Structure formats: C-alpha cells, structure tokens
Image (cartoon, rainbow, N blue to C red):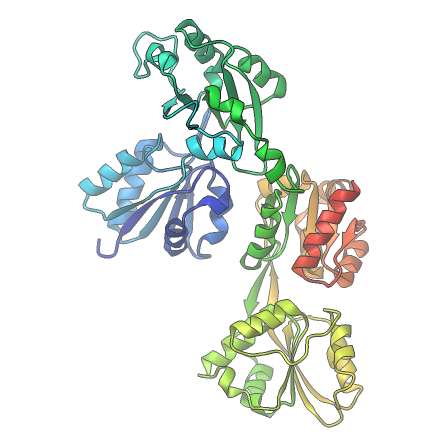
Length: 505
C-alpha cells in the first residue's frame, strides 16, 4: 500500500484546455487512468505512454463498468501501490459519484486527493454567452439533476419549489425528460414565456445551443435535433446572451480535422487547431523511436567534436542526438567553438535551443534542398559533416554535400515506426472534413492501415492538407488529391493551409 494514491480529477466541462494545472500534472503522473466518456477522451494525449487506460464510462443503455465495480477497482489499484487518476467530466463532486468513491477509498486506507474541475453547469452556459447570475435579474442559481422523473410521486427535487424561485435554474442530465420538466415547471407557476436554453456539447467545438422559452424549448430542441449531453438553463439571464458564441468560436468551428502525426508530437498542432474552433481527431499512424546504438552512431559520438558542420533535419533528430550525447555525459558544452550547426527549419532550431544549442544556419526553405542552398556559401571541400537524420530519410543533403567534396557521415539516429489506430478512430477519421499529413510516412502508413473500401472512402472523403511538397508528392503517389499545401513546411504553415482549405470550400 506504500506509495498508492488515487486522484479524483475533474476534467472540466469538455474543452480539454479547461482542465486545471493540478489536474494535468496528476494525470501525467498516473500509472493507471480510469476515464469516463464525457469530456475526458481529449485528454488522453497527456497520459504517459506506459500508463494503463481503463474505460469506466456510462451512457444511456451502455455501461462499461458499474459504479460498484469502478469503486472496487479504485480501492484495489490504490492498495497495490499504484498512482491512479480517476478522470471525471466536470467536477468530481457535482453529480459525479466522486464522494462515494472518496469515502470508499478513505475507509480502505487508500490515500485520495480530490482535484476540483469546472462543472458544466457553469462552464456550458458561459461558453454559450449566458451568465448564470446577473445583478439586475438573478442573484443566485440552482443546479439540479433532471435524471428524476418530475411526474413521479416521491423524489428529491421539489419542482413546485423550484418553479417559484426567482433565480436561474440549471438542469443537468435532463434532455430525456425536457418536455415533462417544462410542463411541470409551468404548471407550478413558472412563466411559460420565460427565456430558456439548451446547450449541447458545451465548451467544445461541437457546441450547439437553442434559445427559446420555457414553453417552446421542447419543440425547438426536437426541431434542431439536439440531444445528450446537454445543459438546460431556465431564467431571464438567457435573454442576456450577448452573441459571444458567434464571435468566439473561431474560423474552424464545426470542422473535424484529423491529425496523423505521432502522438508525442501532436500537441502543438492539436492545440492550434482547437484554439481555432476545430474538433480534432488524433489518429497517429507513426511513432518516433530513437535508435539506441549502431556502429555509425558510436563512431559519430566518438568524433562529435571533430565535425566542422552538424546538420539536423528535424526536431526528432535533435532530441535523439541530444539523448545520445547525454548517455555519454555530454551536452551543449561538449561542442567546440567554430562548429557550424544547421537546422532544417525554425521548429528544429527551437528544439536545439531547448537543449542549449543555437542554430547557426536556418534555411529559407525548410527541406533538404533548402539546406543545400543555405550552405552554398560555406566551403565544403575536405570538411567533415555529420547529418543526424531518420532511418530511410532522403539522401539529398548527404549526396549534395559529398558532391562538393565534403566527408559526410550520414547517420540514422531515430526511426519512424508504424502505429495501428483503433477501428472507431479510423471510422471517425474517414468521416472528417480534413485530414492532415506532416510527412510522407504519415501518408504511407495511413494507407497501410486501411482496407480497399476504406481507401476509396478516403479518396472521396476528407480534404487532404499537406505540410509541404515532399509530403504532397507522397499524397499524389497514393492516388489522392491535395486540397492545400503549406508554405514553409512547418506547423504554422500547415495551420494556414488548413484555413485556406476551409475558406475554399
């Protein structure tokens, strides 16, 4: 039991950016993660690669694990000395059964820490531009569960009393009983023409809302096809909606975009797309793995200070080379003055800077040919050059420098391995609006995991956005069309290309 800890973490109302700093830290520390279906899947990229993931979510008609089973599992894992993250949508103690789990853990002698989260009862209305309090209209709000049938005789919710309260009424889990709730509140005296709203998937790019009155909201919700998960808001504050949704959702709102790059690299691209309002589907088809040892690597590390020029063709190459140096007790101080360090682009230069190394040359074109152009004024005859690259990378830089008389050690320091996405992830990707490719390997590996019917759907389905000309050529070689190509072959350029593809639709 020594070292065991269970974190009850509130994931927030749905937007993965709304998890707290403490919640993020606890999630990244966990050995095991138990997660629900609402507002938690988008946080899986924060989890350690070796952590165990257990789905304990519940949906209407579907239960991955009963509450008793979930509680027992938390106790068992804590007693085994595991660091466990119990990830819940919203706040753990707001209709989340978190108190029951915490009590069971305390009784079993397992350490437990509650990490509060933003409840959807407040987060969703705020994201829809609806203040739950407003000084001139509502100085308080009440939050209740709509899971109870308002027509039954014995219940915890006193709907007659709730109807008479002058402030905002917020109902969670009430969409299935919306008409009965509306009728009961009206019958108990709440005005039928009082403003009301339903907000589905609040705070996420999928957010939709319907604003009506207490009496007309059920019909309007049916007309618009809103369903679970949703929040109901009744009160005059709904009339204060200032139009923040239209102003703040971003140019990619309502668009689903697939990210195929390695999960460890996806966070910057995902974050940028989500900040613009997109729904991001992570379908990593590759993973990056450093090459631990080879004769070429050992020879290069022995001679690291003897090279006149060191060329890094990606941020992955930087990290891999830095790891090899660290294994020998070396760091940036081990490089000698006068060595010329070349980074293929600003992303690679930033990775070098993170390891304390400044790039001397960053070409205008962030491809191998750009590196050769940038080194055109640098004498190469007789110079020793190290190129730290991926296995099976194009030999264009090495061949070009050898042609100018350089002695080149072209060393693979990492490799790109194929990943197999889950079937439901592939299905979601094929239904997306846009699919992004950040390397030729992401193209070939995506095609490799699809069957013939799925390849046909890919060709007719999502619009393809490529990070640069080499990746675009791989797309065309695969028989696909390129809707938009990034200028600059970097993530900011890819974001601009996505925006261009959307604008062109």
